[in-house]
Image (tube, each protein chain N blue to C red):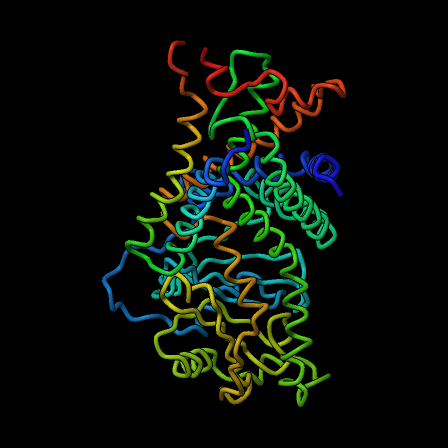
Length: 386
Length: 59
């Protein structure tokens, strides 16, 4: 294939991959913008729960008491998970649902980890941020919505790669960063599209690719259960979840798990019969304290009756990849300055998407592209400033 | 005239590599890694602002 035909083929790929995904990418960029600051916005709105300050070393309440206090508020429900925020170990979030199966119907109770006092019953399924979150994650359409957005992400990656290939013919006669603002507005926006597109390349590709991987999270976790946990849990297959009356103390299970992995903190505990555990186990998910190890969860399966550790399987590579890809998508691992830069890069991406759409709507007649590539009018930097 | 590889790709590659180091440094280190990520990801943002708003000489 000669080079003109090759460029035409890439231009076709760039046009169609972008056209299909642009509207959804604009939606993702706009809804993602407030999500970058969800903690800060939560503080402002007063929806963020924090534990009251107490001296270090204040004795902690038994986890069994914490669960009992939360359960007393919703006695008709079962406890699926109890979790601890990464930045606040004075707090437990207890998640209660009507069934141990995965469900959208959940109640959350925030309990003080020292006094076992109920601090709040946060509602995570309403309000502005919830709508932004659902539009960003699954368009209110569950797994199908996630996978659809993941496919749009794949098209974005294709648009980025083809855009890089097309950077060559468009920039052949131009110095890096040239913006021809004196001619038709379309030329100015073409140059800005190329400039912002090539500068945000690595960031946009990273956030796009990790976003796409995140859409597969449910499937990856299901595969892990099938692939590794099922062998581990074969002896307990088909058993009903251990009834509440026969379960040993949870505090003891937590301590057994922590003993197994010194230096790690608890992220969350999944109860018997829930999707992250087995019918017969409390599964404690631990995390490290370094920025990277804080993402890599270590599951420890603790027998729900005896409180003895059954196993603590290594995470397979695909779960590690999923967990590492999350911060790279969220931009939440470098403090507030990083969040601000994330927002600015997000806005730059919105401009790239918007200008791309504009360039297509104002597309020239067939004979014009040569001129835009700077060929016919000799739009070299010298020509421009003369 | 065909531009050299460096003329065409020098800045894009430099800014791309810089971004990549910023994305990774904050992941592996809490202190200096965060600070480096602000510089390395902030750099490309400043470069965009500079080229998008600058007026060529004589205008």
